[in-house]
Image 1: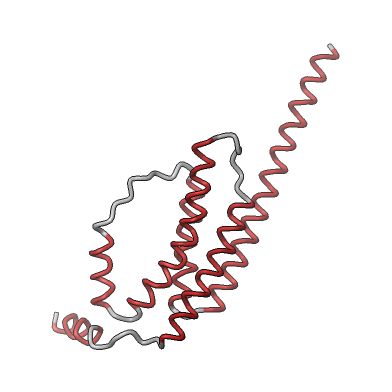
Image 2 (image 1 turned 180 degrees about the vertical axis):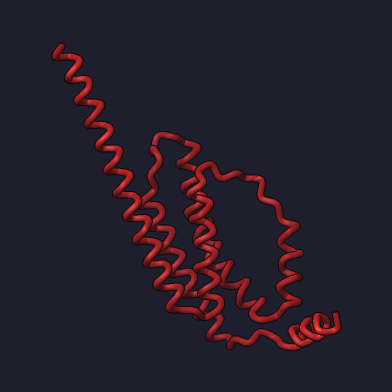
Length: 168
């Protein structure tokens, strides 16, 4: 038990370990990567555009991806390696309740990934942040083309079935 108190005491001794210029750079990189990620998300959104609820969700999640990326970076700049701040932040964030349900489960994963990009930026893991963002954008693009191809195949099968019925 004494060791636990010693760890807590040592972790609360320091302040923010990054310079103001590094903080600005980390937040700026998070913003740029968040913009790229949100833009690719918007381009590769798969749902039908006619559904007003899903279109509204797509728009709000696009903004949320950007804000979560920046917010994730800022959280990790503040928490850094301080155990007391981490527990305090967890307690403070547990007071916030989001009542908006996400309709598409894949959007939940995309939101978590935006937080991870922000974490990498906030912890000055620049290579991980950039490579992770590029890779995730690549995955979103590949998935978009796979789903679009499957939809085209289903439409052509449906059309072929209709033509076959008309010929009979």
